[in-house]
Length: 473
Image (cartoon, rainbow, N blue to C red; front, side, top):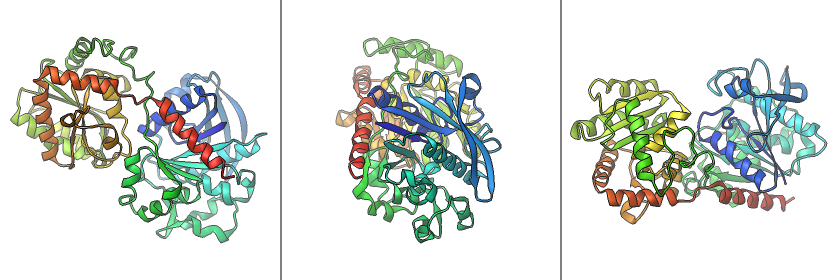
């Protein structure tokens, strides 16, 4: 089966969040299962692009309304990622450092989608299935069905995988002329809440809809930023498939980014050495339980709960625990977190930004990982932490509910129900008590390290979904 994955992100080429990790791993495992897999993303001005060799396999121009942009398709020469990687190079639109956040994002990603489909129809053969990811590629299923120039793709199955339904890519009908020509009798397919909603369009037009966890599929039927009724309508073609993690990249036995490698047989010694390295870097005491957070500092992730919760537990448990924050996002939350540095020096520290190597060390060296998310479609951080013997402290939502069971129920983590400062602090106190019971602590760590979240299982679920929709041709 020839599979195209079309996405805005792919690790390690361009990463903002978990979308990149999924698109950088799932195709590799599908390729290992003897399918031919191609990943297509925009060509950003990234370190990966500069340090690797590419060959131009196609060039032309893309028409966006009244404008024409030249583009080229660049293929990474060595297939080092375990699949064929293609970058869509559109000068002036994507030769920028950041993936998102520009005023012309609508124009950027529409151009990317049109250029990608133009290249696909120009090939000698069409793919067996096209898997789109999030709203940045949401117009593709519509264009495949209704735009005249893509008639060749009308019977090719498309699937939209939703990594986060909060972001939907809305734009006004004043930009309708950007789309390639189609019969205006189908214009109603584009409309949702008086605008063109890219995610809604994908949900309507794709042959199948998947979410990145079973529980998230249930949640978006009653909480989906205005798309609840639509998700209910398409439930018949929807499935929740829990993400996996790349156990080759996230492997404490072989991870070159951590201080000391370890396995489930010697994790106590290994984790302690990594903890000592981490604590030395951030002026913390390695004899105390270390609570860490890795992620975007946004309300969606419960980032706003971190400053008051940290201040409360540090004042009540002063000199008993350590807290380390790695992340960036809201400037207000960042400022609040940094304000605590003066009051809790030696027990608290931050790294505002993101550093992949540091993230690996934090997973290896921490005792507990905080994830007080309000919204978490799947979550990968809790899976990474389990793999490294670090106990996740999570709010029961989305994929966190699917992957973490409270240790009080013989599970692998610590769970709470509300995204409140009180719930976070109570869970931290439970963790402090658990930390003092080393036998119980290590039992839970072993349960976590034995949990199988590999992509092999997940890969097969995607293949079965592709086959299911292919049989509907």
